[in-house]
Length: 408
Image 1 (cartoon, rainbow, N blue to C red):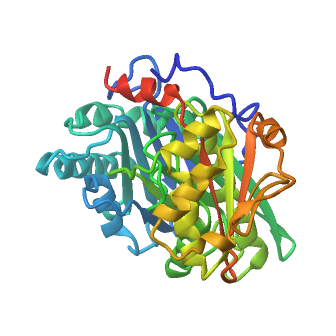
Image 2: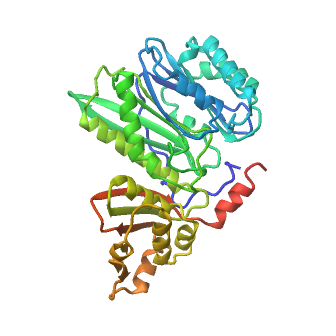
Image 3: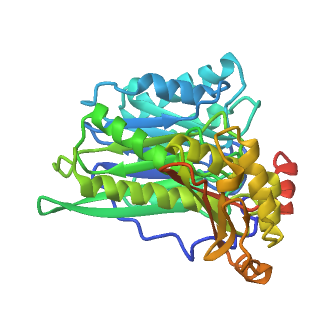
């Protein structure tokens, strides 16, 4: 399916030129987990001393790889580490078989690559409820070990794709104490995307030096501002994870460095928006900004109610500036709002002010804006200082077609 799917009209022109990160190597292989004729397993090896942080789906039906990764965070960083990812099978809702597959893979990676089992992080993405053919992965490990290269990040990004129409990557460079520190990230995701970790697979690598606990705090905080501010379809996955590895190979301590934090935020937001741009069937990227809420939490509740509304999303797909659907979504959210204080704008076109249609509003102006590939919607609740911004996409028939055929 992935090989024949039409590339999203919102996709970047090409995969970015990502620099190598000291202390990280990659390899991929076509193991035949589900897909034929394409790489579907990725192995990243990380040098001794690497700190690893993670943010994971909060689904109560989390897959075995997610639970295993969560249990391993904070392990001794003195030994090497590894990340292994397969696409095509989520190893989710597979009972005890799920953990047995994880254990078998980790044991085999440990023996083949000389990495302790408690430093091996696995992820699986794809169909739920089918046992993982982990023997195929294990049989590919010698090839993965032999083909490790510092420049294999693009092939790694391609190997982890499922219904994605393009590989997703991003990079940032930061100068600290006169030395350049690299941050590189890859992601997969296009459906089953909703904030609660952001429900996707994301791997970020840096040669900066971090203590694990400090890296964890930075990653968690930044994820809340980026990946947890996107939604494609309001559905939260069983399987998906964000893992960041700081090898420390540069020798530069980035703890508390504002430039590094800002660069990481930019990279994570770029990857998050790439996921939305690749939303299943998407033709438009939508930015929803809510201001004037009683606090930021309330602002986010309203913003996500709008972003997840099928009526709002289909109106956008149809290029219809139906602002009444936004009013509806605000009202149903359950968060504080006052009908007579709400103002709504599409781009620079003010539609309604303080609970009533702007007398100067011309629907033709808003309709023209709706034809753009990126649409900005702003809502001022007029009640306080709380604000947020979230990103979503439209809902088209393509979403139905992709998901109806997903297991075919």
